[in-house]
Image 1 (spheres, rainbow, N blue to C red):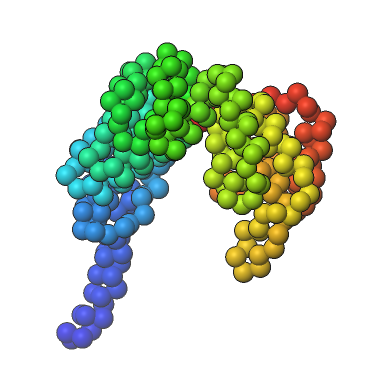
Image 2: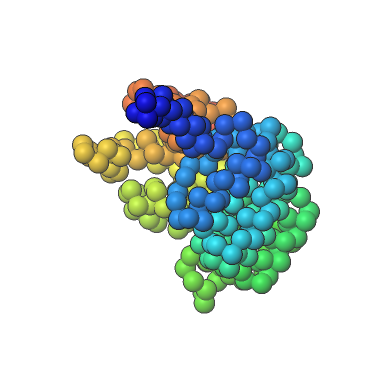
Amino acid sequence: MKSIFKSVITPFVLIGMALLSLPSFGQKPDVLMRLYFAEVRQGKFPAIPKQLSLSENSKSILDNVGEYLTDSVATVRSKAYTIVYLAGSNARQSHIREVAVQELIVGVNDANGGNGGTALDYLSSFQKEDFNTTSKDTLRSLFRRKAVHLEKIIKLIGFLELVDLKEEVRAYAVPGNGQSIRWASLVSLARLGDASAIEEVDRRARKLPVNDDVVYSIFPDLVYTHNKQIIAYMVEVLQRDDAICMSADAERQAQIPCGYRIMEQLAPVIKGYPLQLDASDDIKTDDYVAALKTVREWFTKHPNYEILKDKY
């Protein structure tokens, strides 16, 4: 009798346990966060529940995430910044995105330098209009206090066109400052439309040998400037057939034109671009050779292309 009872009850116990292991099932965002962060505190790395990135939950998430942003555990705060980023970037209402930006800017001051850098990286994913006056003033304060990751703050200044800080940024572009700070200041000034900085960035870029390292580490900063003169150099390189870059396939590496990577880098900033990117920032195509040909022909036919400036 006991064995029969056990055989009958066990399936129901297993079903119950399975349901308990799915905390996102029908739960409110605040409950989901409590369950999620309880696991994070135990040193686990659970996936963030999908409900915490849904646009309809954005306001509720931001209303309830505060306690985790100030938690004593650095990992908890780090995950909280990620949730703020997801909630804000997926929000449909502008005022909710503004709240997310404000929370992330406060996070730049996190006692853990890595968390501060993460918050800054997330900020670069928002649009210019998501930064209100309060956010911009806080960013000015961070810059003048020489907060950690100053080079990232300087590039945000250029993105947001805080022209009142132009001369203060210029002071970091001269010898005596670290190389990364000087370069960040130059590209930021170029983004702000400073003629001398534009010439200097263009000159330096053209002096470098074109290879994988330059395309992957320097060209993204050229894109960041959103400057026609500087991006025109990238278009020049895109048109070259020299096989001096390496394919991304680690098992079957081959030398290829650098244009394949450049056509992906330019896609988000050129109005009317003939190709689109997928969620992984890869070109949506089954034929990369044809895609590169399409982009090259498009630039030839559209020499007066327009550069979008609403994004970082």
